[in-house]
Length: 286
Image (cartoon, rainbow, N blue to C red; front, side, top):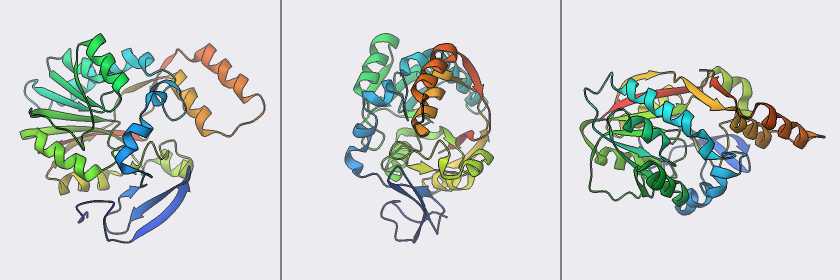
């Protein structure tokens, strides 16, 4: 069980599992939390989630704006999932909301939507093109006078530079009885075990926390939340994004550049269902 108030300052012994991209991936012997410490915590979000993350591929996106329709539908699906646990749409804060596409899906289902996003370009797009209220910043440093019925952490929980501070602030920002929706990769999945250190989610300094069901539930319990439900998301992906990830995670070889370009041109615009093998959603209540 987790006992420390800060993962980085935890006095418990850590076991070095492996090194990836020059970063040590370690695991706490007491609570089992698996993480990698970024070089500069204070500037981590600014350095990692610059415009290049959203527009230059590799561990990010070749063009995040191409994901618009997929992500709006993803938000719509999640709005329907949480409706099984929340009686009526209320106020929502989407953390790491990027351009606000998932927020748009919730908004179409009657939610009053707000977002936090560290990238100024993405936040400006959401405000201008989608008319979504997005504040530039992070959950760790947020300063808001609103409280919410639901906070969503979609593909965000593994990226926090200070995960304990983020969840402490999430608790403060929720109304009594409010909920948190998390979408997270499962480090105990068969895919993760088969791939080992080459699993696509072992990609520090972008992703720096990796969870199992047990460690994620224990983390939220430590911060005052009760586990409510979990499931497998029906998630579409753009093949151009998937091809870019493969490009960034495989060694160079003869004709690789031509092969990647050929795949992007021929099938890059296709959308497919991501197999439900290593990704989950979770709902917690304050």
